Amino acid sequence: MENLSLNDPPPPGSPQRQMGQMPQPSAVLPDAQPQGPPQLPPQMFTTAAQLLDLTDKKLLLVLRDGRKISGILRSWDQFANLVLTDTRERYFVTTATATTTAESSEPRHLYCDIPRGTYLVRGENVLLLGEIDLDKDDDPPPGYEEGDVEEVFQIQRAAEMERKRKDKTKIKKVAQLWGGEMEGSGEVLF
Image 1 (cartoon, rainbow, N blue to C red):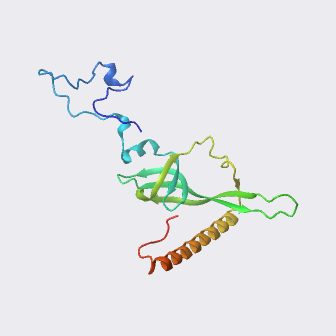
Image 2 (cartoon, rainbow, N blue to C red):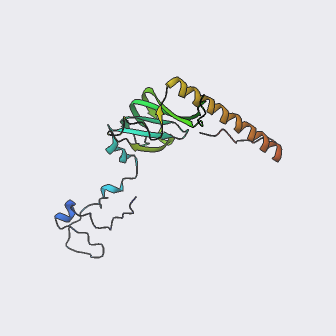
Image 3 (cartoon, helix red, strand yellow):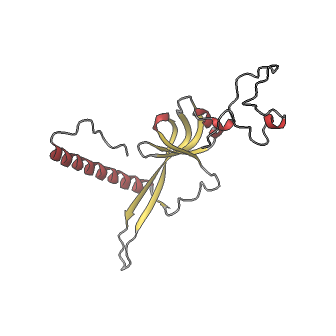
């Protein structure tokens, strides 16, 4: 992101530069008419106003809990709460394949999209947001093949349960080492 200030000259081709209105930060002109408050360059939007350019475009969101959601941005507010339509949740899993031949078994990388409809996402839960290139949208992710929704969802659920089981055993071991329970440790978000 650029570090811009009010004293920077306008970019080439801007209306101010074309009309010859260059700012004079050190000159004080007694006969000059007040020009009003200084205007920020359009690149300096640092709030939810940046979402204006992304309205009605297809976006990919990564949420704090690890979910990956794609959909068309329809509306947003000052808190960056988002309304997405035609939303799909994408799961990525890796599974070992059991081959009957003498070949080495390589893991399979699968993905699937689950339609979710209209989604309201609270702004503080958005970890990453980006526009999807519509020319490459139909291509599978590199290194992944599309899998059956039920199969991918079942593998994802099993991996999530295994992760939670490991987290509980880690918490028990830490509690034994340090004594007492881990108050306020909470659950891992992803």
